[in-house]
Image (cartoon, rainbow, N blue to C red; front, side, top):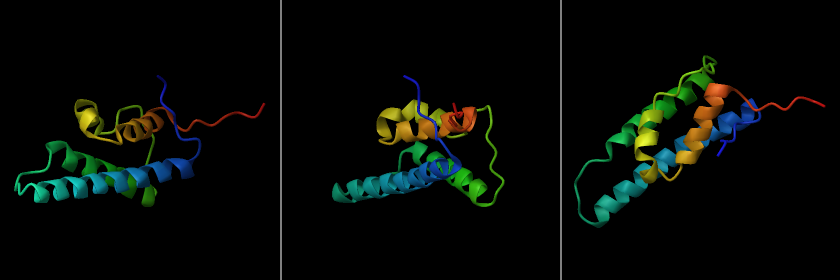
Length: 109
């Protein structure tokens, strides 16, 4: 299955913003679940890596220092390892695919 890539910079930025929202929402859901069952455990180890990685991409974009690359984004290793626990893993894979291969700009015919 080929992953969709963002068609323009605005769409790509929106995906990154959505990923920031999703990881924050996941943290809130996990916190709520832990409170409901009275657990005082720790968040899954991948959560902090996701938060930091997505925030780094977001800040680089905001500061005008973001650059597409050929390498996977740093958080992709945990995405692959924990995809079944990350409801928005496809979004993260699409962000990574766009990062690695660039925008999906269609040439005029």
